[in-house]
Length: 181
Image 1: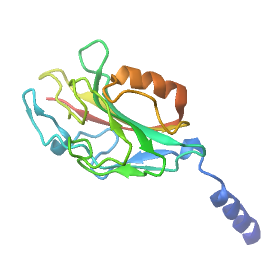
Image 2 (image 1 turned 90 degrees about the horizontal axis):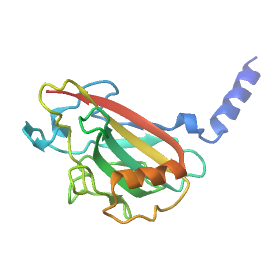
Image 3 (image 1 turned 120 degrees about the horizontal axis):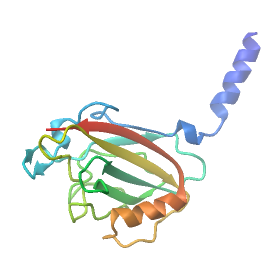
Image 4 (image 1 turned 135 degrees about the horizontal axis):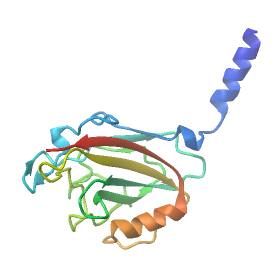
């Protein structure tokens, strides 16, 4: 019986990572929990730290040639949500981003591009929903892509980046945090 269990364990642990195993984690974000103050916008009436969280991804599927990251608020009262951060052309060798990578002088992997958000500029913009609007969801999503590079201008809109992600995503993983005021 132990020989069967040992053989099964060897087979399971030697299989390549499956798309269903792809995951996203953060030391400061918890799925379904409130965003810490350090990730809240400092502006528009909010007084947070406006620091992008450290993120790590694990078990990218075979064939991954690059990554992209988005942060999206589907509850913003705009009719189309609100894009808080868009990064693409993250090299396949990357396994995460450090805290603060979304700032103007943040340390992104070489070749990665921060595109224009709904704030009108590149970089991370923290949560700051309208007062009394209830909790909003902030969806941090990492995409494993089948291309080394999305051939897009650095100031491409989030919608344009999203269109290209739709055609090249092998797998994606998300953490959804909340915030209201």
